[in-house]
Amino acid sequence: MTYCLAMRLDDGLLFLSDSRTNAGVDNISTYRKLHVFSPTADRLFVVQSAGNLATTHEVLDLIGRDLVRADESLATVDHLFEAALYLGRLAADVAARHSGTLGRNATATFILGGQVGDEAPDILLVYPEGNYIRASDDRPFLQIGETKYGKAWLDLAVRSQADMRIAAKVALSSMEATATANLSVGPPYDLGIYRNGAHELQHVRIAGDSPFLARLSDTWRDRLLAAVDALPAVEPGDISILDPDTAPT
Image 1: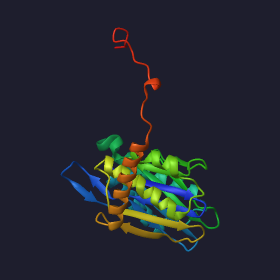
Image 2: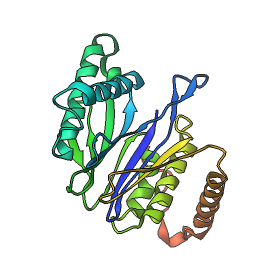
Image 3: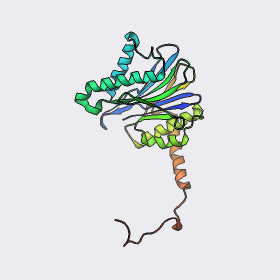
Image 4: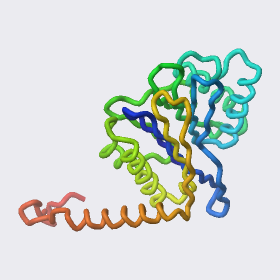
């Protein structure tokens, strides 16, 4: 399993991916799930992946091959959505070639973000079938992989007006909440920040033994416990006590 998320903010884009893959509790590996392509000076693409790791690697290899010798590639598209369609076709074709032995287990899902020329930066979720959706103004983030544990925090905290510093804290809190709930998600974490018009990504890796992650986890736990203490107690007038003879079974 994996967890990747991307945010579209007024100042640019933010990407965060974990790096844990596993085929059982005794077979855990680390693989990068955030990949950066900058084929020309006027464009940058960030690809985040979830799903079949072999399919992901084959798709990435095909992207690299096409940059060298194909008429259609990330170097030739005129719009980000065309890059999403191109990525979707590659992923669907690779999954179809291996579906005879793997079935739906051959599929992969991607988040594609970046900027082409002077177009506004954006993030798109590319489905295994090859189509895509955009993030909305009301919900300016996308998730793939193990999405449910970190989504509530994003729903509460993410707004397009948030600055990068706040957005990074929200994203890392969402990641830590997911990692705490599911051992198949974990560090190192790859964090990418893209500023509008830069056509380059600020990319850092946060290791599992990072003092910052320890502080973040401790603060997250302490604040959650404080929130539980602050929740209102259930008072007698707030509930109806059912007669045991009439209680539903």
